[in-house]
Image: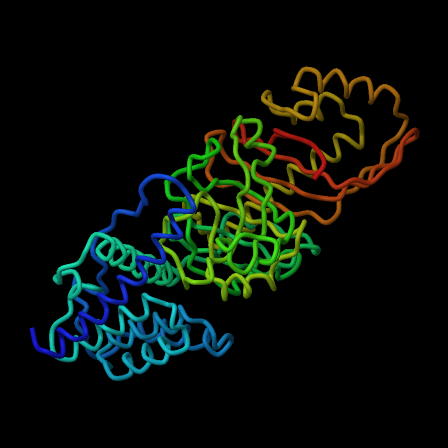
Length: 450
């Protein structure tokens, strides 16, 4: 090993050591017990080799162009700079890659992953580099430094793979079937990619449009949240309920937090417990955290939390958390919309026309509402219908959100404003239905107020 290589390695070991001490102290405040990190293979960019290749492939150039657009929209998009440096290096432009990472390290001195990769690229000038952090991995380190290096490698792999997954021809998240005019944006989480996508409501009858995406940190344990303290991030359709500024929060939450309504109606029905599931920032002495490091919350960097705040409206913005997002074509999106909206319209007409048997047949055997199951609901509705001489029912501001894959089968959450007029009662309410597909028919699983 040359003197220059030794110097660079020692510098980054020192950096890791200092970082590990700070992070270790923070984690010890978050929970008792050992730090859980995600097992992962060594990060590679191409054929298990990080050595630059030439020329830049057409695919990489398309990604570089997209990253360039990201940075033009937001000059503080540090992840875009990081990924640009990696792709420039892979394309053989080592000098440009080093310049990109050097500028990033100056702009974001707390971004330890940027420092690590910059060190790798400097070493790669005179030695083959096979994996990120590979040179440091061959250097004696204490357990804290080794753990921190492993976490940085995991973060690099997840960031890169999560972003590159956007090039796989995926189009529309199945979750976003329809958005009310009152819902300007929706947030979709893909836990398998540690990625959060922001979609803009493009208008009635049009698929939502992607506007932003972020690396996120999830719960230390994988899988769906079932009970309080299991350290898992829940899967489901949720809504932002409030905003908590940083001055009202412990330092752990960084620039602020957006709580969501976990446990939702279905979670409570399934006796899931716990609470305090938030989207929030990162402790301000850090830039980012490893992929699996929260107690169940969805965590962003502080800069990205501030960026996402422009898209969030409390009480309106949905946050759909998936184990893995289902991506569908525009044709599939349209077909799914037509199918569910047709079922909802049939439900409305049967109710309005007092077709009692057809109306009640649209309720699942597992139906529940506040104080009702299927049997008591039928008795209640028969009594109500007996006192009606006419009913006029209209639905407006409809949002349809497909639930993440669930043991009950295909599920859709329908939010709308219900306008009800009859001979003996008039009223408007914000209603929520859970629709379940049973034997190829959509039925109402839950009915209640939003």
